[in-house]
Amino acid sequence: MTKNDARGGVALWRRIADEIRLDIIGGKVSSGEQLPTEAALAQRFAANRHTVRRAFAVLAEEGVVRAEQGRGTFVNSARRLSYRIGRRTRFSEGLAGQVQDMHGELLSTRLENANASVARGLGLRPGTRVTRLERLSHADGRPLSRGTSWFPYQRFPDIAAVFGRTGSLTQAFAELGITDYSRASTRISARYGTPDEIRDIGLVPGSVMLVTEIVDVDADDRPIQYALTRFPADRLELVV
Amino acid sequence: MTKNDARGGVALWRRIADEIRLDIIGGKVSSGEQLPTEAALAQRFAANRHTVRRAFAVLAEEGVVRAEQGRGTFVNSARRLSYRIGRRTRFSEGLAGQVQDMHGELLSTRLENANASVARGLGLRPGTRVTRLERLSHADGRPLSRGTSWFPYQRFPDIAAVFGRTGSLTQAFAELGITDYSRASTRISARYGTPDEIRDIGLVPGSVMLVTEIVDVDADDRPIQYALTRFPADRLELVV
DNA sequence: TCGCATTTGTGCGTATGTATT
DNA sequence: AAATACATACGCACAAATGCG
Image (tube, rainbow over all chains, first blue to last red):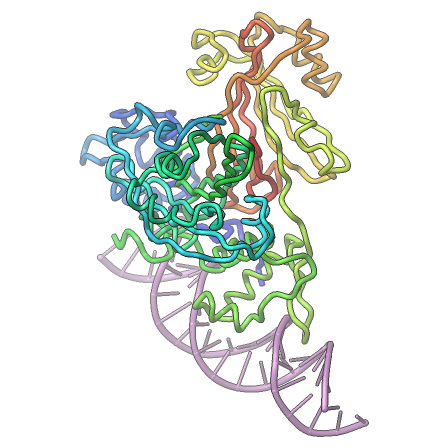
């Protein structure tokens, strides 16, 4: 039981790819710019050139870089999106100006009993009936977030139907008599993507996800939504 | 170039360990509770029992679980800390009540020229002289965060010395005439830990880090600090 | 005390993936 | 492209500790 080899279960080519992708997304190297030679990167990462090439192959597959024989490897694109969160920002507003097209997709709805976390978030007793919505949002055609929302069933028995018809939470609430609501709390954490998320959002295993856990309240401070939203951390950052 | 084997460069034992750790930290299984048998988990993850055992070995090494021969494997403990961030919260306040002892350590100081990010954060021209501080904070004896701060040199030429003496940023600013300051912006992202962070904080390679990028301003809204702080995501969440 | 089922701990052989030279 | 070394993952078998009747 060697227990802890230096690699920690993450292949070297994977870590090299992650680090280079991070430099690109973080803006350390700009779009169109030429990356260091494979030999130079091999030295920097204390790896073999073969291993760097494997990392480049993955990044090229993702469309992040482009290799040109005899010239070098170049950055193709893409800064990270900034999603603004605040007491009164609506989901679609948070990315205003950064994406052309933005739309959500309702994956499924379910009536279930609140577990401890959901009950705490909505201020209900565990076991109370709640409506659960599974959502997937797209930005410019690419999946951007995977969200799960819970609503108190007694207060909003029809929310699944209304949301499915309107496609907008703000509008759905409006039809149900909630003209105004705001964010009561936001918790932010990070972890690896689960197999489900990787499938839905179209990521590679081991991708890092940003997770927001939010509670929305109506004008009387009564909780109306508890939601968990997961974003791929290499495509988006949160701005408070 | 097979490009994308199913593993994506992350070992199966590593992902099993991450998922179980997540269940524990997230509160899905409680302290002291017995985990499913190795055989059951092997089935659930479609893995060999040896592979599950390897994941358990890592978690046991971290102190998260404890195996007892002939009985089973049990959860040792540990919920995640919640670090509250807001316009006026100071670093030490953010964790009030959650840790017994909290102290910071000044790793190094350096005088350098602002790069693009630092210059943007502090509202200076790139190349302007700035003081850079490298910090490591501990909570209850364990390293909890790794921070890098930049300050405009012209305005605070002695901040390194003063901070080194007082150990508190609030107090250092007070001695330098800043009686009040607040948070102008907070950006939050997530990524893998770098080799340096892994060494300083004492993590295993491939650990997920939460990264906050903040700008503090004085009472006249002039930037006085730009800082990057990195937290291990499995030990801490952020609360807005 | 004994037998028995359950569960963790250990050993070995094999195939494949990773990384270097 | 090929040879090599090591890590990962699987399958099978058996030992050791525990709890129970």
